[in-house]
Amino acid sequence: MTFNSSNLPEHIAIIMDGNGRWAQKRHMPRTVGHAKGAAGVRSLVEFCAKQGIPYLTLFAFSTENWKRPEDEVSTLMGLFVQYLEKEMESLAAAGVRLKVIGDISAFPAELQARIQSTEEATAHNHAITLTVAANYGGQWDIVQAVKNWQQANPSLHVSQLSQDALAQHLSTEGMPDVDLLIRTGGEQRISNFLLWQSAYAELYFSDALWPEFDEAEISKALHWYKTRERRFGKVSH
Ligand code: IPE
Ligand code: IPE
Ligand code: MG
Image 1 (cartoon, rainbow, N blue to C red):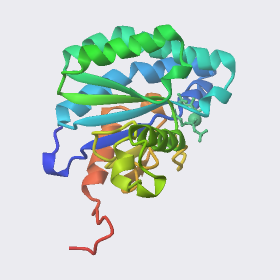
Image 2 (spheres, rainbow, N blue to C red):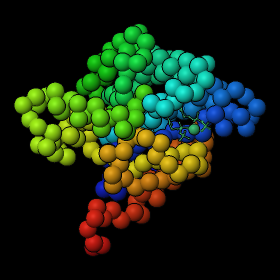
Image 3 (spheres, rainbow, N blue to C red):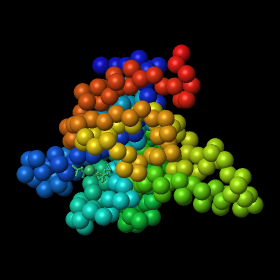
């Protein structure tokens, strides 16, 4: 199935939730759900690229997820490394550009190096920009943007800070704001994802758990998006 490009979101952001419940329902450890969830990412990225969606941002690990049991955190880190090693090769071949947003200084040096080399190796790809939010929090992003703005403009007073100037220092600098924000797993909350960037996003909540969220499910979200009238504060036309 393909969609008319004029009705397509330019930027889809997804809160990939429900891995743990998917596994628990099957009497398996939560970590099995994470592995299953990660395995499905590649086909969704390829699907979005095929549809002509230029930006896809996935919430992989929040600044609050450190509060989970140590073995779950290390499984998630391990999956991220594995992902960068295995899946990225085929994604790169499909023209995917990878970007990672979040405070990656908290990650092991080896993982930081791997992130940097994958970003560099895919920097010239154009099919789709896949942004992975890792150790990301919307509140962290806004604070780091203010700090970076001050560092870039030491002679300016904070009273001279504008919305446009701040946006240029967010981790998503250069990307369009989120058009469609999807959350799987049935919860209806933002959990500190792209707070600033989702100011006018259409919000789509799916009861499907992340490992079940396939092409048919994302197609439903795209069909729903097509029916939205985006007013941006104006009146209906
Ligand atoms: C994945 O789903 C989200 C991540 C933090 C990787 P969860 O692990 O939150 O799954 P549930 O919500 O407990 O089912
Ligand atoms: C949001 O899911 C974070 C990610 C998907 C990475 P959580 O499962 O951590 O969110 P809460 O705790 O239910 O709000
Ligand atoms: Mg969850």
